[in-house]
Image 1: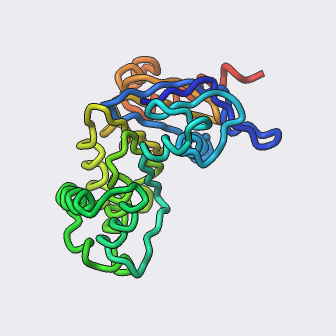
Image 2: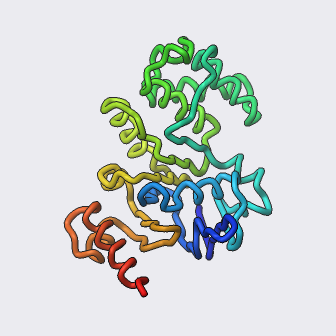
Image 3: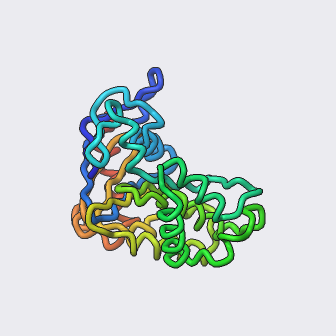
Length: 245
């Protein structure tokens, strides 16, 4: 579902990504872990066809991000922590407007909206203007908008950032329930407890490089640690020591 081969992204002399190679499979939640500035968002923007790679090859849902970007866009949904909504539109109007972008007819839109309203507990959000939303309600509608067309790959980039405890719980419960045959959820975060709860496998990225990737037990065993946060620090420190002159 995701195949990245020797991916690099340069901005002049600065390398935001350097030789990243990794794969993720359908039916799993795959975590992309790293501190702010590690290169996670750059990587996800390349997957979403918002940035072009400097070198390497990336395929999302079977499509090359450079050779067939339109097909990639049809097969992904994207949520980040800073997405806004049109303040004057209701949740239902927002979803209906986006359904048009994906060529969904009225019956399909109505059925999918009803399904998502139940799964995400949208409640009154469908009939209230976005200007009246709480932070949690806004993020629920953002997620509904991203998955309205039932994408093969859902990209969540720091999607829990700024959410209160109730909204964060709703998001994590949604991610845990998102595993389906033929679907992949990419969960990018710097909060290790979130990754421990929802991810089947994770990749650790630091200073634009892939440090390691594997299941949570594999990562803990590799680092000789009892939790993911300690494992993360241990593996990053090992990489820095190995690269030191």
